[in-house]
Image 1 (tube, rainbow, N blue to C red):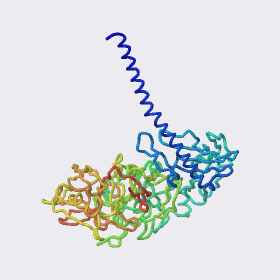
Image 2: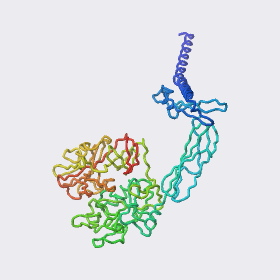
Image 3: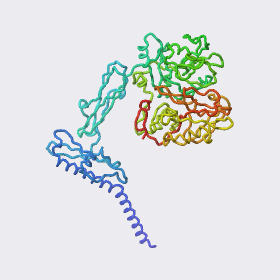
Image 4: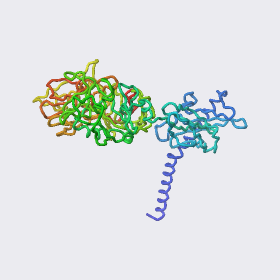
Length: 603
């Protein structure tokens, strides 16, 4: 090919490249901008037509009248939708507007702001910047005088510095009432673009001052107080009293799980402690707790002669319970719960509001230390911990700001141990959140037409190992039949590990585990909230547990009086179903606070 032809070819290629670049710029930049500016023009013309008809609404003086894009659509001054370029997303109809103001010469000026994502009108649409004196969050003690620090400056990107005196302040504070209050500071620029800044004021009271005032000269609560409830780590505790350093001793308001006496310290200071949130852990003061050996003849003592080493958590002693005074005091459970006291190496004392049989009407009962009974954790927190909200009642317990409420629209992967949620009118509680995988337990056993649904095992050879693949096994019924009574659509298939013991069921002494993939399964005796619930005046029915043994007729269940089966299982004995499950990861919280009285609801 000749040199001349080569030059023509190069010129032709260059022209093609220029055309392609021009088309690229046209379609990606110029054309969208032309369309955007045409839409701005349509908005302005629509607003002008509106005020031609509604001239009485035109602003006077220095006032500004605003018509949003949504207004113009709803009033039928615009019809076609405006879209973000190259998408099906509508331009913002709330933040897009036409503002009208009167000039000094009497004419009206129309200013258009259209927000279409990557394209926005070049007009002042931002409110002024408000800077506050002092902190955005202030904590004061109840009864203290509060003087608002006020506003430091108000600066607008168009109007420059504005008068602090023009800032509007909204909100009030009752410094004699514990609670969280908000003060709003509102400023406008000349175009009436608005900015709101909020300062939060927490009126608090130290826990020790509340307890001191309540107890007077006494060191602990007695009887059945109704004003000593605390919520920490999404769990309810009752204030027992004060120690010698004016720190506050708490006791769980109900059994959390059932554990062998021999493994109490391991379970409490390992598993249970790890399920408290970080703020609660920082509030805990290590302390010594009474654990003296006593006998049937010294069960009425109120003097302790032997203590543990300093630990984070323990359980109440017979002495603690006796100091609370009375047969029905708040330290006695309706289930059977361990005290800290043993009678010899083989037996320790459990307490209950009332016993049956030979121990009818007694306060304490000695039983084998390898048996499983209820655990009510007891621990001490710093007395200067500040109460953020609450009045100490069960329905409105003292809180310390240690738990963060999930906002509507947020995922359930933010749920924490102890929080409540409702799924299809059934109440569940969070056992664990394992890296976003949320495990829940039903607050009650399954009922239908007010009757408890019960099942029994017909497994051969006296073996009652938990096996969801065996049609004769309770585990099969739980996984495959429960959906007849409850909605399981929010639960995911998940691998579980079934603990199997060689003899008695003892915490931490599993002989082996076996994996199964299921949707529903029974609670583990040693996990959070697996004990019978009774705090809010309602009792769970009986229910099977996942723990089982390769020994003859040894399985685990909770009876309808809240006591674990601590003996050989009797063939064909019936127990109910209290389900556990893992939630699907696409669930979103819509409302609620995660408490028993205001559980989270899902979308």
